[in-house]
Image (cartoon, helix red, strand yellow):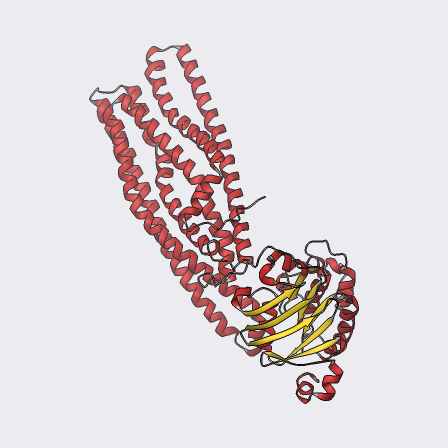
Amino acid sequence: MKTDTQRPRPGAAILRTALRRNIGAMIAGTVLMGLYQAAETAFPIALGMIVEHTMQDRSLGSLGVSIGSLAVIITTVSLSWRFGMRVLQKANTTEAHRWRVQVAACGLQPVARDVDGLKSGEVLTIATEDADQTADIIEVVPLLISSLVAVVVAAVALSLADMRLGLLVVAGTVGILSILAVMSRRIGSSTQEQQARVARAGAKVADLIIGLRPLHGFGGNHAAFGSYREVSTDAKRQAITVARVNGAYAGTALALNAVLAAAVSLTAGWLAFDGQISIGELVMAVGLAQFIMEPLKMFSEMPKYVMIARASAERMALVLSAPSVPAPGSGRPEPGGDLEVDGVHHGTLRGVKFRIGAGEFVAIAAYQPRAAADLAAVLAVNVPPPAYEGAVRLGGRELAELSVAAVREHLLVNPYDAEIFGGTLRTNIDPSGSSRTLPEAVEASMLTDVVALHRDGLDYAVRDRGANLSGGQRQRLSLARALAADTDVLVLHNPTTAVDAVTEQLIARNIAKLRRGRTTLVITSSPALLDAADRVLVLDEGVITAEDTHRNLLASDEAYCLAVAR
C-alpha cells in the first residue's frame, strides 16, 4: 500500500486528508446508511397507514399490501445496515492503517529536534490509539448525515399530519444540538489532555523496561516505580474527568431526546383527542417519537466523536509535522568502499581527521566514551551533515550529497546498545530474509553456542528486548545481525563489552576473517579487536593523536598501554 509521504499540516488538515482519501467509500456508506435510517423511520409511518386505511376499510387486499410493504422495509433496514457498515468500517480500518504506517515512518526518521519532547512510548500511543480515533471521522460523517435523513423524514411525515408536530421536531433537534455542541468542546480538550497523560505514562513504562536491569542492580527500582505511579495516577485522574464529562454528555443527550419524544407523543395525543389528526396519524406520530430516539441519539453523539477525532489528529500532527533533518542529497557513493572523516567538529570531537581505504580493517581506541559515541552518531547520520563542521566522505562523496537510503545501503553503524526484537534468532539476525551470509555471521559472532543450546536452533523464540537472553548473548546476536548485512563499510561500536576474554579473542579473529576485503571500522578498547586490526587510531580529547599497529603502540605509548591493556 502506498502512503502519503507529504507531511500534513496540523489537526484539521489531517482530518481533511482522511476525508478526501475515502470520499468514494463515504458516499457509498452515506447512501446505504441514509437508506437504512429512512427505511427504519418509514416503519412507524407504515404502521400508521395500516391503521388508517386497512383497519378502517377492512380490506384484505390493503392488509396484504401493507404486510408486503413492511417486509420490504424490514429487508431494506437489514441489508442497508449490513453493507453500509461493512463499507465504512473497511474504509475506517484502512485509513487507520495508513496513519499508523505514516506515524511509524516519521518516528523512524531523524528529526531536527525532539518532537515537542515526545518519547518513543508517546509516539507508540499516537501511532495506535490516536490513529484509530482520527480514522473514526470516516464513519462519523456518513452516520451524521444518515441520522439527519431520519430526522428530516420524520419531520416531513409529521408535518403532513400536522405542521405543529413537524416544527416541534425541527425546533427540538436544533435546541438539542446547540446544547450538546457546547458540551462537546470540553470533551475535546479533556480527551486531548487525557491522551497526552496516557502517552507520558506509556513512555515512562518504556523507559523502565529499558533500564530495568541496571535499576535492580543499584536498587533504584522502587524510586523508578514510584515515579511511574505518579505519572499513571495523573493519567487515571484525567481519565476519570473525561469519563465524567462523557457521562454528563450522554446523560444530557438521552434526557433531551426523551423530552423531545415525550413532547411529540403528548402533542400528537392532544391533537388526536381534539380531532385534529386521525387515529392512524396518532399511531404514526407516537411510533415516530419512539423510533426517532435512535437517530437523535446518534445525531447528538456525533459532535463528541468529531472533537475526539480532532484532538487525536492534533496529537498526530506533533509527529507528522515535525521538521525532518535536512535531506543529505540524492546521490550515491562511488564504488570502492573507502571512508574519510575530514576535520569533523561535533560534541566532544575537535577536528577529527582520518581515512580508511577500501578493504581495510581499522580500529579506533577512544579514551573518552563520549567521543566514541559522538563519532558513531556522525557516521550513522543520526547527526545531519549541516549540524557539524567538517565533512564525512563515503566512496569519495560527502554525506551531504548522498541520499539517506544510499548511505544506509553502503554504510552500517551498529551501536553498542542495538535493540533486540521479539521473534526468533533468525528474524533478529536477518529481518528481511535476504542475507547470503547468515551462517557465516552466526559463526563469526560466536552465536553458535546459543543456537546449539536450543532444540529450535535459529528458530528459537526471542522475547521482546531479548529478555530471555543474557547480556553477552544479546550483544553477539546484535553483532551477528551487523555481519549478516554484509555492507561495503561496517562500523562496530564496542561490539564485545559483554563477552568473556576467550570468546572476545575468537570473535576478533572471526570478524577479521569474514570482513577480509571489506571496509571495517571498530570503535573499541578491546585488546583482541585492536590487535586484529590492520592499524589503530587513538582518539583522545576529540582528535586523533596517534596511529600505528596495536603492538607497536603498546610498546611505544604508555598512555595507550594504560588505556587498553587488561
